Structures are given as structure tokens and as C-alpha cells.
Amino acid sequence: MDSSQMVNNTGTDKYHKPIKDDDKHLNPLYDMKEVPKRTYQLGIAALLIGIGLSFYDAGIGLYVSSFLVACFCFATLMFILLKYNEAIENLPITIIILICGMIISATLFEGLDTDQYLYFFPILIAVPIIVNLKRTRYRESGIYIAIILFSFCVTIVAGRYINHLEHLTAAQISKLVLFNRIVAISSTILFAIAYTFFEEKYIRELMEQSKRVVDSRTRFLATMGHELRTPLNGIIGVINLLKQEHSIAQQDEYIQVLKYCSDHMLQQINNILDFNKIEANKLEIHPVSLNLKQLMQNVSMPFTSLYQEKGIELKTEIGPGLDVIVLVDDLRLIQVFNNLFSNALKFTEKGYVKLKATMKSSSKTAAVVSFSVEDTGIGIAKEDQKQIFEGFWQVYNGNTKTLHGTGLGLNICMRLLKLMNSSLNLTSEKGKGSIFSFDLKLDYVQHKSSSVTNTESEDNLAGTRVLLVEDNQINMMVAKKVLINYKALVSGVFNGKEALDALEKDAAYDVILLDLEMPVMNGYIAIYEIKKMYPQIPVIAFTASVVDQEMLTNLIASGFSDCITKPFQPYQLLSIIKKYIKKAVAVQ
Ligand code: ADP
Image (tube, rainbow, N blue to C red; front, side):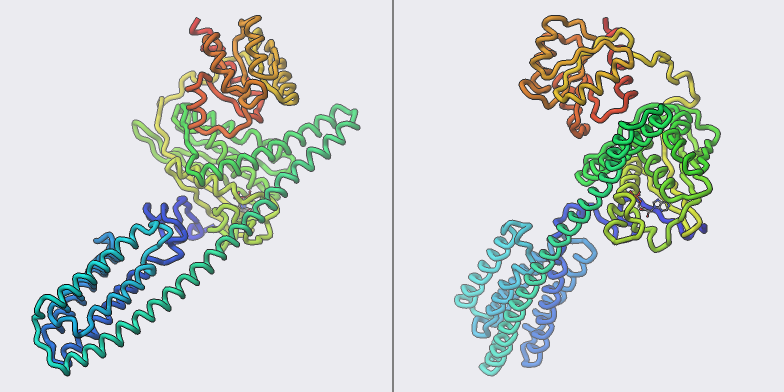
């Protein structure tokens, strides 16, 4: 693989025009109307008419008028160049004021008889062409029209009541009238035709865009349907097999399949939710301090058996100097590696997959660490290397590999890394494997690893009294079983009201797991009552909702200590409960 085949993805579109900050907030319809381009076109049209008029004036002996119009042309050209170099903000208003000023001064020189005021009509017609009515809600166009009408009135009054400065012969007047009438009327007609043409084009693009949205939604739903039905099919099939199977070894194997299918389903759903969060700019990074070496040792663990089954070697190479405590969002970093590992697994049939982490540079306060996942799989053709980072790309382009995945994984990795001020690089060649790599700058918490490792040896909740408030029977059964397996003493109730009744009889609970959406009394009301009467008991929200930082902050503000989302992994429930019972003990 040569380095020329390396693709870098920073999240901001490297392959297309760079997106400026302001542009991001533009309505796409605004772009479709090509309004900024049209303002240039209007400026150039005014310039051409001005040059024509200047020569014509000179040709019929009106040298002062010719000079005046030439000055106007020069000014227009300057403003267009200034706007092009982004030195001025609003070109349309500048051009309109310039043209109006030009007509008023021409009338002051030539009087009303030459029909200069007719040029107000094409400018009036040009207003809707250069203004996006939907974006500005008529304010901008109202201002432009007001300027034009005001200038028109000034022209009429000035032409009628002020003696014109240049002396014109009757022949010159009639030639100018002819010229002005022809140019003004034809440019009015031209602008009207242009307006109709632009609007038609705009409406066509609007319709095409809405068709594209419908098409991509249909394809997206079809893909998601396929992606979710596949593991679901596995789950249903294996459950039926399990019912008939009596051999413990075979049952164990089926349970592994069930776990794989359900984890896969969860990953797909999380990908979609993340993608949504990213689109809404709601994805956040929460760094915590942890030992980098330990994290790297654990990161590939969930994949070990999957790789073994496929006969692919899973190598890990952790360079020296990584046994340090750094600040990093471990969940998001693991998510990136999970995506890279599951792709490597999907697209590699033989050989190996290697996770590599090496120290690139280190200062007193931070380390720059290079991470990579290399595989000896099918590789990615050069022409596909840019697009695979785009969300849903492969699905929507009918790529042959589309039936495995939603095409969201790499896009999410790329965006997560961007939030961590990094970018995802790809070095790949078709048939020869791929390397996905990125560098992360991580702040040190501690240069040398101390005993920050998990000192809590007890992996159970022996003697811990948990009040579980959950209205769904199945979720109740699962959570209860998990907690009982961890030796907790669990009491289950089905809504907030029952929780309050239970607490009234006996408030000696160490922790309360409280669902949010429940009949009779939901979690939001129950927490208020619980905190009023039993402030010492930590309450953990137990919800299937998508919890972002904003929601977590609100939950904590309403009295919850923390939140665990469903579906959960048993160890997550264990560690969150341990965190709070430990705190409660420390406070007492
Ligand atoms: P998906 O969920 O479909 O895997 P990704 O965004 O993770 O979505 O990947 C997009 C596409 O990039 C994949 O469908 C595949 O065509 C290609 N791809 C990703 N990783 C690899 C890899 N390690 N080897 C070969 N192709 C890959």
C-alpha cells in the first residue's frame, strides 16, 4: 500500500468545496436559488448597459454625461471586485443605491426629457431575482423597493423643478430617448424572462430535492429494516432451537449466538441514534481519567471469540510509554474501535487484524498517541475510499457490499474523532487489506500509572437493598434477575405511587432504580416526592429514552443521582449501583 492512497477525513468536506462557518447555517434552498450569483449577474448587466450608454453619450456629443456614466461603471466594477474579495457585505443594496444615484444624477444633468427614469423599471423587476424572499421574509426586498420608489420620486421632482446642468439639443434628446427607451424596455423584458426562468428552475430543484429526500428515506428504512430483521431473525430462530435443545453445551452455543445478535442489533440502533445526534449537533465527548494501556488491552476483548471462530488472528501491539493515566472519553473511543473491529471482521476472510497503539510524542502535559486497526481483508478500491466515510453512502450507491451494514459506522467514527480534534485516515488497496488510523492528543492526569486500577475486588452487591420501580414486566424480570445474581436484595414495584407506598412501610433501601415513563405516577413526579421525604436514598433513573447531556443535567437537577439506559449490560448496572452505595456509605 503506498502512501499516495491515503485518504484523510476531517469531517469537514475535504473532497468538496470547504464549508465556511457561515455557509453551514445557510438554507439549502438559498443556495439553490443561486441568489449571490445573480447579484453579480445584475451588477454585470448594469455595467454593460452603463458602458453602452457612456459610449452612446460620447457619440452624440454629451461628454459630461458620458464621463458621469463612465464613473458609475467604474464604481460598479469596483464594488463587484470588492464583494468578490469579501471586502463588502451587501452587494445588492450597493448596486441598487449606485444605479438609483446614477439615474438621479443623470436627470440632474439631462433633465426628464431623455427618459432616464425608465431604468427604474428593470431594477424594480430585478429585485425578486436578487433577493431570496423565503429567507428574508420580504424585509430585504421591502427595503430595496422603498429605495427604488424613493429615488424615482426624487428623480421626477429633481427633473421637474431643478434646471438641468447640461445643455442638450433637440436631436440629442430624441436620440437619447430612443436609446433609453429601447434599452430600458428590453432589459425590463429580459429581467422578467430571467425571473420566470429562475423561479421555474428553483421549483424544479425544489421538487427534485423533495423526491431525493423521500427516496433516501425509503432506502434508509429498507436498509434499517434489513439490518434489524437479520439479527432478529437469528434471535427468533435460536429461541425456537433453544426450546428443543437439551444439551447444555449446545444451549451455551445458542446463547452466544443470541448475545451476538442482540449486541449487533443494539449497535445498529445506537448508530442511528448517534447519527441523529450528530446531525442535530448534540453529540458530546465526556473525558474521564483512565489508564491508557489497560483500555487498549480491553478494547479488542469482546471480539476475541468472534475472530477465533472465523480463524483470523487478532493481534495487539501496545507501544511503550502508554502505561499512563490520561483524560479520554473511553466509551466513544471504544465505539470507534468497535466499528473498526466489526468492519475488519466483516471484510477479512483470512490473515490477521492488528490493533496498534504507539506513543508519537509526549510533553509534560500531554501525549500524542497513534492508533490503528490493520486488516488483511478485501481492501477498498481507490475510487470508493472517499465515499465510504459518507453516511449511508454504500447503501445509496448500490455498492455490492451494501447488504452488510447501514454505512453509518465510519461516518460516525469520523465525526466522533473530529469531536476529539482528530481525523480518521485510510490506507488501503483493493485485495491487500486496509489500515484505519488516527492520532489523539490526550492530556496527562498522571505520567506514571499508579494503582488507579480497579481495586474493588468484590463484584457483587451482597446485602445491598434495591427498590426497583419498573412498569414493564419483562424489564422488571430481567433487572431483578441480574440484581439477584449480584446478590442484591431486590423489591420490585410497578409505578411511582407503589414506590412511595413501599418506602412508607420501609425506607431502609440503599438505592432506588426508577423508571421514568410509568402509568399512575411517572418517575418525574415520583422523584420529587421521594427526594422530599427520603433525600438520603440515591435514586438512579432507569430509562429506555435517549439520554443526552442536556437530559442528564435535567435529571440530576430534578433529584436523580445518575441514569442508566435500557438495554443495559449487567456490569453497567453493577458499577453504577456500586458507585452510589459507596458514596452513601461515605456520607453516613
Ligand atoms: P457498514 O455499517 O456498512 O459497515 P461503515 O461505514 O462502517 O458501514 O463502512 C462503509 C463501507 O466501507 C463498508 O460497507 C465497506 O464497503 C467499506 N469498509 C469499511 N471497512 C472496511 C474494511 N476494513 N475492509 C474493507 N472494506 C471496508
